[in-house]
Image 1 (cartoon, one colour):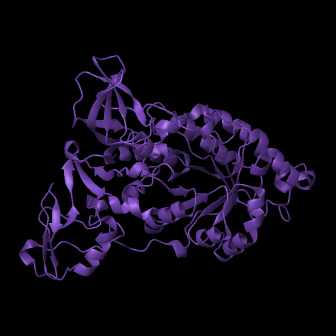
Image 2 (cartoon, helix red, strand yellow):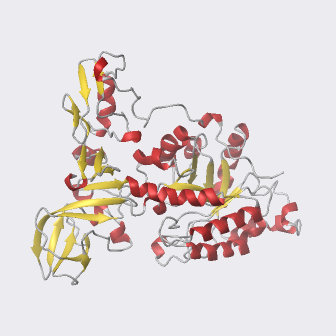
Image 3 (tube, one colour):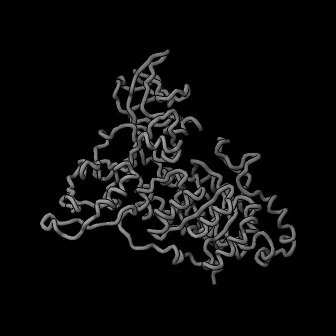
Length: 503
């Protein structure tokens, strides 16, 4: 009999039957021939639900908060709401839906490319279907929950870096679609654990001290719920091929994960108890109550670095992986699984080998692979100045709207552009802030830029919306979804109130 615990979501987390989306109840459309039907949405509820979104709400096919069809009509206590395709829908001045061609979306704006998102999802599902791996969305990279219902078709759930992300993943994917919710953080408070235990399937601890601190409470809770959540430790193999220290969790002095020597100090008697790893008893050791190991040592990488890292993991931690109590291994994120040149079949083979050798469920938690090449940041030229080079000042900012450009740093891809000097017209693109270094990069174009010219930065779905800020009072870009019909649907827009509420 397999020692692996059957994967399940307990009843406390079962998916209640509910409408598309979860912010508003679903009311079927009223036939125009019978406008006095009983499908009524109370106006007071409607107003209340719209208010947090600044009087806007997304309506997007199957992802809609309210679903319309071209001939549908909704009755309200004091009027009716009609749908006209590709136009703004309003009820007494309240915008309900706005759909525009990409070229007409007001700037600044993030646009999520839904067809591209599906393409990524299909490639991830290919890996999971053929390897048995559970693939989770790392929400630290992409947390636009308006598309979670679509992503739920392809992945096993979400992983979080703290309570807020975990709650979001649980509310928007875990609970409604019966998907898994995982969480890891460098440290948890007792209050964190009280909130996380009821909503998470896996909780991963960063240190031996953290596990010791929370083990009693965590184990008692899991005992009452039949083993959920499951608990694991993040290990540090002290091996990574990430070249940028800012993103390398294995640099000397890293605070992330437990080294082999740290475990050895705690498990000296455990290792000495038997030469056979499978016969060693975990009772009374720090391994008691643990079900898995987790490592995260990759960033924007292909399969080959993972393959080499796994060899190091096995050299250092195989004795723990062989324990009957260890039922899962999480390979972390940073894997560009959905890129054209990624060796997906190699990954499938390696996942199957690990599963069979150690009798474990293998998890992968990519963030970028879910949203890579699936979004735009659209900006407009506000002014053009000259100081040894022509400088276009934009309504988008590297510092505020795509901070990785300055942190990594890198030069973001831009449609219709070339390397500086390659074409006749070269410009430096800068943000509309007082930060002298708020520079996006130097680009050349076949035609000159003008005030009002629109620029489409690509691959902007990941690490943008989750990291943006309002430094200098910069407006946050609105968020749109580009659909199969070529039209963009407004999800959220932001204003002064959003800036003020954070201060």
